[in-house]
Image (cartoon, each protein chain N blue to C red):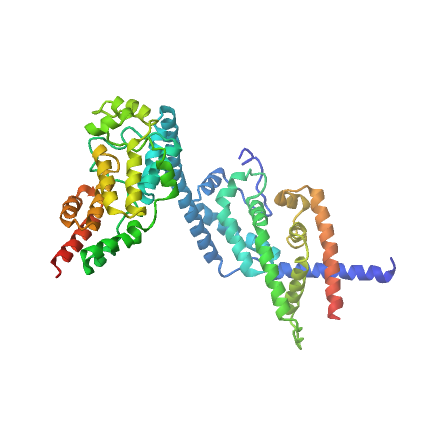
Length: 310
Length: 197
């Protein structure tokens, strides 16, 4: 290294040292907003502590209770029925009864013994069917046309019948589900249901419900047939007969409220308004709880308007 | 915590950290945080500004340090001064702030390619600021570890042992980082000066 190189390196070192000194002098740690920074830091710390204490005192205990209760239910055998009740209530809001039935049966989940008391078939809301539910828009069309036209407009209403039953639904109904019979109390029902007949009619305890969970459901096929005639074949006369057949063997069956409502629709389509009105009036009165109450009332109003119009 | 009270307070950087204060910090008590902030914010901010080279980004870094303090204090064993510990928190949170400040400097450099007209009578303050700006641009070319080491060693004038405690690396590693950082800085500044000519 010659003198020039040495002096150049020394000069660079001096420059660098000067630059370091400059940075030290320029950035001395003072800032007029230092109090603001403290306030912001305290605010963020408080917010974080609140989140932590919420997690510590609310979320963690809730999670612990959930885990413990799930473990307890799993050990005592209550987990599967509880899960099936939850899943059923979730599915019932979106799935037509037949598909719901299929889902339950294919999942192999036994129905809880107290899921649907046999003595209260009418109070329990039957699963709502999106395809079967008449839209409120059906009422004006009924009101503006003569009765036959009203019936045809009902049939053409997509919400009523345009869609055939779902594939899963019919496939599931072919091998009838075991979980579907909810109320094996009626005499005719008992005669047709070997599994249900084996169980005591008054009490549906879990011990009795367990064997019936694996037995086939003879009523589901009747319901599926009526559903097909009504909504796929669109033959109200044969559908009415099929609904009557189903209701004869399962007057308090799981789908009997749905069957009664569909029967009333078939009567409307056949122009038998007096009988339809009588059936629908029961729904409108709330004999089945809130199930189809508003729909039935809309249909009754439309029928009344039809009757009063010249 | 076992070391608390065994070590003498750091006179130079200095503070002593009673166990009660540490416990209060762990509980994020506003009073304890305010006390520590009042004692150490200038030193922490100075390091942040020198490391980041941007006053606003440094302020964000200071805020991050004191927000993280209640959690980080659990790692504090009392084998160094609380101020040193705060600087080590700043080092751990500096990455994003350094990047953001470097990006901002690069953007400003692109926007202001024209050299500033020389002042007829440049004051010493202007010269210092220009030198500081050049050094910050050169520091942007360094990896973060080398940048931290050289800032702590050459600007903050800390010992290798202290830097080793702050960055959690052996002293030899720290010295190597400083050596490579200074060599790179010389190259960058030489190139800068050559470009200006």
